[in-house]
Image 1: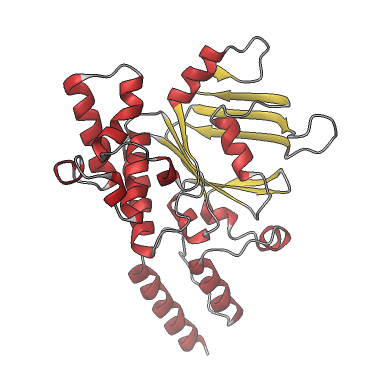
Image 2 (image 1 turned 180 degrees about the horizontal axis):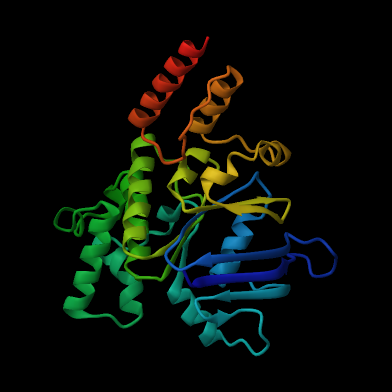
Length: 291
């Protein structure tokens, strides 16, 4: 898998006059089409890293290459950043606060129309984006944005991002403030985008959501602590304790059973509740026969 994002020895400081770094010596590769979850306690550097990828910030030191654009090179022009921001689009926390058009369809169309898309091509792009985000086009295109519920406004805002058809979609705490049903819908959306070959990056404090990712990037105090599939990362108990991270519920259950001498052979992060239930039943029966 070819990499679409490359960090090497990357540092970033918000305060140029001193030696405080929000990110320190980050070396990381993200493959084209990967879904990556960024985790870490508050202040770990997640949002800063995502903003570097989106070109909203430029590195203080080191290498940053995103979608073929080198953000660390001298002579970087605004047109280069504009190109990057069309390829890598970020939806900041509570993107629904950015809705400003009267009608939902017009708001979703704003971005691509600004980039020159018109007529039937624009209508098809808006329809696809709204349908993908979970807003049926015929029902919602003429709905006033102020009449939408909180969850619908979040979907409309995400549809506006999808309408730009980016190579890389960056979501900073996308599930913040959502109810469980809306959160499930959001994670389904991330799955749809992965199937389309999009590179999707999202930050979260909910470890259960990371199970949808191909890879989890763990940050602590601006440093990269790990970059691994969830199946590998959440088995590193010492690392999780060091960085104050609780694993997803399925791993907590596995760890509790392990303490009771019940080993779930064949356990993996992508198990359905039904598969996990059968595995626990088999493990308990096996242990009972051994006693």
